[in-house]
Amino acid sequence: MVRAKMLVVLLFVALGQMRAQTIHSHPGIEASQLAAPELDIDPNGAVGTKQFMEWTNVYYQAFDKNTFAPVWSTPQVGTQPWRNKKMSNCYSIAGDGVILFDRLASRWVIAGHTSPGINGNYYYCVAVSNTDDLSSSRLRWYTYSFFLNPVLGSNSAGHVYFPDWPKLGTWGDGYYVSFDLEDVDNHYQGIAVVACALDRTNMLRGSTPRPMQCFSDPKQIPTHGVRYLKHSLIPGDVEGTRKPPIGRDEFYVSIQNPPNDGQSTTSNSINLWDFHVDWGNPANSSFSNSSLTVPTYTPGCYNVASVGNTTCVPEPALRPNGGHHTIDSVGDRLMPRFAYRNFGTYESFLVSHTVEVVRGGTGPTEIRWYELRGSGIPSLFQSGAINPGNGMFRFMPSIAQDHSGNAAVGYSVSGASAHPGIRESSWSLTTNRQPVEVTIQKGAGDEENTQKWGDYTSMTVDPVDDCTFWYVDEYFSANQVGNSINWDTKIAKFKLSTCQRLK
Image (cartoon, rainbow, N blue to C red; front, side, top):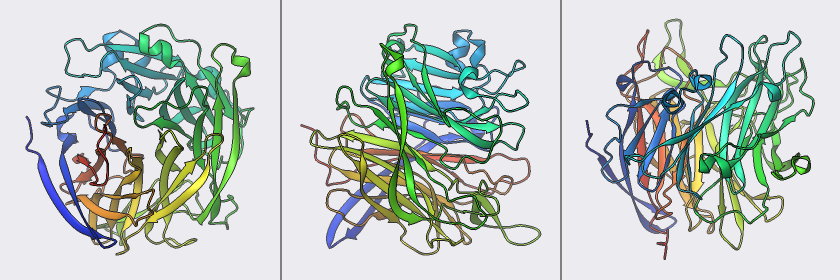
């Protein structure tokens, strides 16, 4: 059924200037549409030339950009492209799916990792479309499965580490992916990371890709060890249609969590990773780490007694034994995307994450953002925070920028007296104006039967006008209790009046 789109017109004053912003929003995938919805849905998607495509665990759907009509009558099972090719290695994708639109090639990309089968094997599954039009009768998917076990390492019992939270980015010379390595025998504690380059050139042709090139940190993956504190790498993902300069290395970023000493609560750095790939001579490929100093922060919901537990965001719903139900901020990492844009005269990278409003505190959270610039190894150019106050918790951000240098970040909000909802803030990166916050969707219910609130969302920019931002996130129309699963997602689009039309 085609749902009527909702038009919200919001007028506000910013720095003495009247600016008009129109947000168009419409329903995305809903739990009620799925045969087997999950609690932890990881809502994300991307805007292409003709459609917006969305993923929730473990289904995908696409919507016409103008009419919002769904492309398929019902959401498609997430493993469908590989099932159509009878690639049984990819029948068990159980979450952490990612949707990308490769703007440099005008192709769609679906990717996710498998859960282990009887043989304990893991695969990273990637499907690349042969067209930019998902409604075309010519639509076909080039499907690939990359065997991961040889690069994942294993613990002292010989059990292969779980490749969690994979993130994928488009670059000129490859698709780049990262994995957190987690010990299945030690409460899935993260002990290392792996980054891999995939042969984008041949994948776009439907040809056999050259072997993936992978590096780990530590270089020698330990069989046991302490918690890894610079996990969850995010690869650069190209925005716009201007390619990175020829020969430009790909970069990743990750958080640097405070020392796990039971006392420290702050950090003043993030990690930058330089991945140089040489497809002709893999021996020349390299992967190196450096540190960027940033304003001091405390990761969102940081708990010195249990640094992997980032659950503290309150909802209005009360627990039977007292206190509010809480959800996970996923504040222990930077959040995708690591959005890259080549302006010709300079190159810009954007990333964001959730931090405490008060350093060392346990109160409301805000959104911290960073812009990196530089034609060599990029460095911190500027940073800022999204916190209009009112005691709300802001978390789970995703950031992007248009071709005029305007930034927009979407995120979830919640509080003890406000159901989880969806908002965005936008501002000019070139004039240093203050971000202005706008509500996309007010929540009407709470999540009472799990603390998981997805693990990421996504903000992308329309490749046609290179001005319109598209954002997807989740909310509830009614309380989710007991065994029920009744989440909703919302897809919103908007653009700023200061974005100049493409010539």
